[in-house]
Image (cartoon, rainbow, N blue to C red; front, side):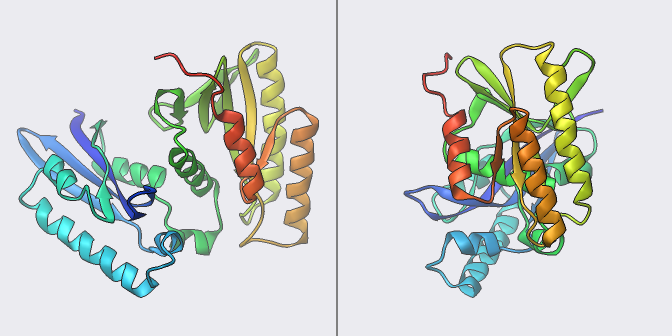
Length: 278
C-alpha cells in the first residue's frame, strides 16, 4: 500500500534579496497509521554553496550549514514538517514549500528525490558531470530564472516524458511549453568514461527527431550537451564536437551547457514571448 508523504527541498541561500540558492538536501515526512516519521538526506559536500557565497570562507560556511542541519534534526523530533518549514524560512538555510507524494518504497523514493534535486559535488568531482548531474543543473538553472510551474515537466520513473513518433514513443528528460509549441529536451554529457556511447546517443536523437516529425506537430526536439572535463582528452573532445555538428546539421538545436552564452541562448529560447494562459 502506498504511503502518504510530504517532501521539501533544503536550500542554502546566501543572499536573501537575490534569492539564489543551492539545493543541499531533502526532507521527507511519511504518514503511516496516524503516525508520522521524518527522514533526511544531505549532500556530503557543500562546495557548490561555497561557490555561490564567495564572501564567506568555506570552512565557516560548512560550519554554519552543519549547525543548521543539526538544528533541523533536533527540531524535527518535536515539530511537524509545516512547522519546520516556518522556522527555517528566513535564514540562509531554508526549507521550501512542502509537496505531496505517494510512496511505495521509502528508501528508494528518498534516493530518487535526492538524485532529482540535489547535486553533490563530491560525486561530480570523482565521476565527472554525468547525465543525472547535468539534468539537475539544468533544472536548477531554469528554476533560478523563473522557468518552472505547470509549463515545465521533468521526466521521472513514475511519470516519464514521452513523445510519440510514427514508429515508436521516445523518452525525453523534460518538456517545456514555449508559446504555441513544446520543446522536448534531452541532456547528453560527454564528461564520462564511455564517451563513444554519447556519440551514439546523439545519433539516436537524430533518429528520434525524424520519427517524431512524421507524426507530431507542435513539438520541437532540443539537445543540451556538456563537454568532457574530468574525463577529458583529444578523442572525447573530437567526439563531442562531432555530436555537436551532427545535431545542428540535422536541425536539432544543440546548447553547450558549459558556456555562459549558450545557457543564455537556451533561456532566451524557452522563455515565453507572450503570457501563458492559466
